[in-house]
Image 1 (spheres, helix red, strand yellow):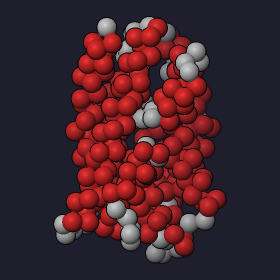
Image 2: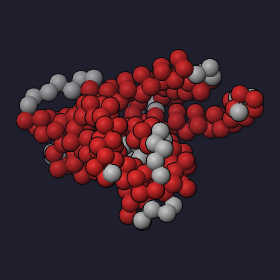
Image 3: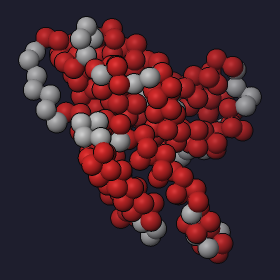
Image 4: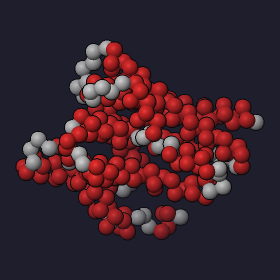
Length: 242
């Protein structure tokens, strides 16, 4: 039963394998070529403990322009970028409650978009579910670490033109957004995000040219505030939710 559960977790994680290896390598190459002194060990530590692709890509710019980011700004940016994980974790509150403390913390710390998508589909119970959740999280975690380290090693060994490589994470989220827009009937959140980001960018172009790296935080905070204010109007009718 144990071997069968581990095998099932590995098979379930295979769709994540190519994505994490590719995106991890893109991050590793960018880190090694843009941040002085960064190497495979740097990538391994960041990917093992951070486990957030979007935050790690943003961290490359933070490390490259450390003088532009205070500790407070870094903390707020990390919170805003990763706040979705807190929402993802809500369905698992009851599931994780009886688990051993270390296992519980590991499952919480390694919860990503893709891991969440796999684990929410599982219908196992008891020890089988516990082992399955751990294995999926562990496999996905190792895919990301492996890709990051490989990218950083290649970035230090081979000459790379990194122009556009930092757009890899943006491209991934654009694909996700397009799929959501095609499958969903409510496009207001996407429209709000696009309009707010364009407005904040235009404001920075007019008032603070050369500081485009600071657009993300105010745009995200303002978008979240507007969506929270509109949350009642954005909810589908009761009969649809049922």
